[in-house]
Image 1 (cartoon, one colour):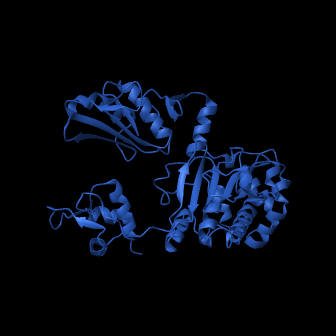
Image 2: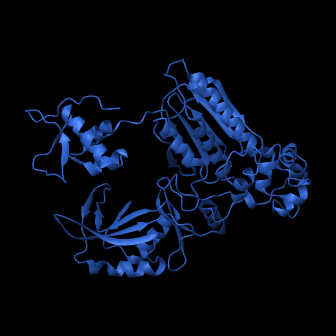
Length: 446
């Protein structure tokens, strides 16, 4: 989210819209002034809605209203005038201003992208082009005569000569194997792509960042080989290390095998192979982190996962599905399966976050809170809650079920109905003692 004064020039606002579309999307609110000391804001809205038309008309030329670009106004009781809100989605294509200029957001604000190299990098980041199609300097024999491709031929039983088939699949172009061919079928892809592997760490710690002193046995593991072997080896090593946590300084730790498998598979398939960095799997006492190079591609953001689908490396994804023991049996369903598996055993679903150059999936070993606990935590920060708000908060589909939960909380003395609210509009708050302080909160239901 960003705030802009209503005095901003429409052309300057256009740069910000381009930058938001080329980054991760978001909202721009026009009509909020920011003080020079930064961090202090004041409402200074348009007197009439029509006064915002100059901004909207110019923006509509380059960014017509659609699923990607929405324009509306906001008002609030006690504040004069109107705010203009621009809602920008992360676009699949490069988002250009009316003049054709391209902007992105960075640490220092909005920055113009000018060089061909920068534009190519942006195309790779957005998934418009894919590094997997680039040719390498590897000899054809590295992918056509490897043990891995021979194993694939035996299992696939659809062809007998790898080289002609690899050429038909455009994984050998101009007598050079592509990145996807090397990743999939070279016995040692790391000879050509040194960082195309997985590093696994085990930290005896719950700290936010792993420290060398907490490395178990002061050791790390580098899982190399073709993609299928990396996935199998990483899942095996991660599971082994998690199993060793049991009976030490923790309660038994256990993750659904589908979760680890799908998230690691997703990282190997969708990482950006143009970035010279490994996938990092960090196993802590209370969580597993899987960090892969490359930000989310296409229209995908942390907010629309796990439902959104976009493949940065379509060839790698499609070919892995052809293996006899395909790690991606349900193409496009990996993260959805991982999330559902965690919820099925009452663990909090994975959390996805973007860094400047990558994506981290956090798999926490943390029990899902009961509905009553979630309601109480909400009321610690908010004055009241309604049945509808409680259902949305706790993912409870039934109004009647939520009403029973709230009724039990009233009987336990944890909450009370707000005086003056009526049926159909009941509001609830924390129970109040005679002195006006909150009552002691009992344990929530399971």
